[in-house]
Length: 72
Image 1 (cartoon, rainbow, N blue to C red):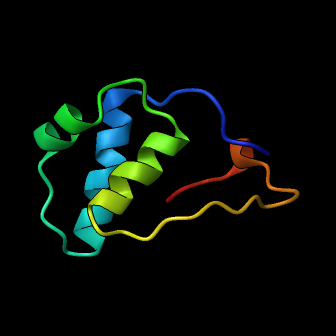
Image 2: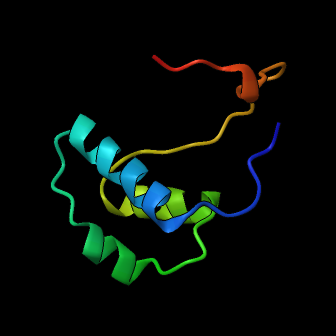
């Protein structure tokens, strides 16, 4: 599976904000939105996360069916 296409602005900011919360990094959504305008792609998420001090990478998982994942 390859992650392609664009992510909605609110979803991208939520993801980055959640990662910052997890790692206890201050987060200002308006600053990220200003420095990284749409479209939001996987590359945009990596760049913004790295600018916030979060190490990122990409590794495909063979056989993963994300549509059948259940999050509790």
